[in-house]
Amino acid sequence: MTLGMDRDTTTHRQWQNTFLAGAIVFGFAALGVAAGTVFALTAPGHVFEVGEFAGELMAFVLAAALVLGCVALGRRHDRRRAALVAEHERWLPGPAERGGRGQVDLDVETARLRPLVLRSVGLAFVWLAVLAGVVAGFVAMRASADHLLKTGTRVTGEVLGVYQHRRSSDTIYVAYPVGDGHLRYADIVWDSGRQYTKGQQITVVYDQADPDRVRTPDETNDDETWLWVLLIGMIAGASGLVFSVIAAVNWRRRHRAVSATGWRIASVTVVPDYPVRKGRHMPDIEVAYRDGTRITLRAATSSHGSVPLKHEPNRRAWIGGTDRDMVVLFPHGRWREPPFAVPAYALNLRTAAKPAAAPVPEDPEQTALAQRGLRRFLIAMAGWYSVLITSCVVLFSLDLVWPLFFVGLVGSLAPVPLAHLYFARIRTQLEGR
Image (cartoon, rainbow, N blue to C red; front, top):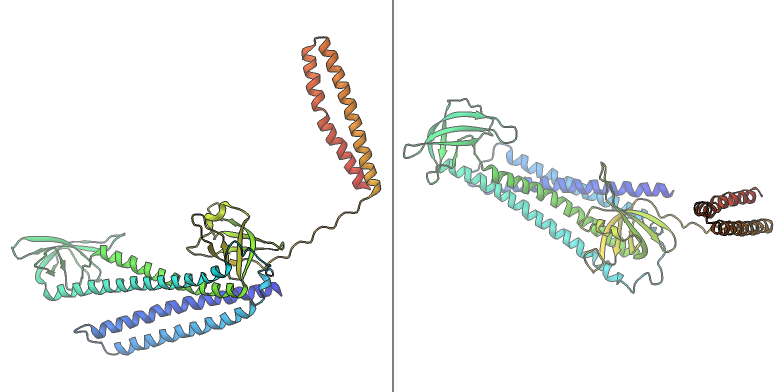
């Protein structure tokens, strides 16, 4: 039943994360559709095609409905999982009288988990601002290209070459006359899909104030450097927003879990996943509670990493939360004095303390046999060293240096293997009884 419950809690947490990711993805889709529709409505001269506005409205409604559905299903699994993890003793022992409260104010540290939620929410808004800046950049780039098409000078140019590149955008190399009659040459990004041939006459539009700024009616010729900057910003903003939202939700769950369970003092050891190999994971945290029970946690992905804390095995810490929403509170980090909270999740349930081994009753016969064996060994060693000392004295008096060295060395080392053999024989006799 315990293992079954452990699998159920893990399954519910996986579904929670799936629906959370789905809500974020569909939320992005709804925001994108809404932003595109608002831009089209406010852009001067834009005319909707037949059914375009209705299609965008239906897409927004569908995306919003999917967001609400994912949120509802995620909350449903959250309630089911909360009922399963209500039994705290599966991950934490009973609360101690003090539990290290004199060293760290645990109530304050529980309250300090809430700012981590707010920090993640703030980062989410920062990444939203980055995405807004990316959208503004794309809009400005598109507006600049449209403005050049409307106000630029149109001349007839010639295609001097058509080039397809593996690692960059395809280009056409064109020559076009400017106002002073001189020919200018430019590489124009070819991304419209239109076919060009060498020697073909095409219309070229250039800016009189800056003749190097050029495009064609079909090719916008956007600045590739800025385009890559915006694309990287879009990827970073989208990824950062997703991770920030997930971090905010997870820290909120951990704060609620720790508020419900409190903290338990323990000895912990951070075990990084070394050496580097495929399928690496975050560091494991071996936890030994004071009642003798143990549990293995794994650090969650977070800016509050645990790898720098690997240099102090069996260090004091406090554990709070349950199942997938646990926190390891260290008295201080590696470079900072305030307590340092590391998010983690349980890899297994808490294992019971091993009962102390019952004392082996003493056998009088075995005791007497061991004592007799020890007395005999001591008598034998005394006789051996007496003979050895006497032999060394005789050899020394006869001035036999090399025989003296040989007898002294061998005679001193010989009792070591003899003692092993003798006590092995005594041990065999005792086990036979």
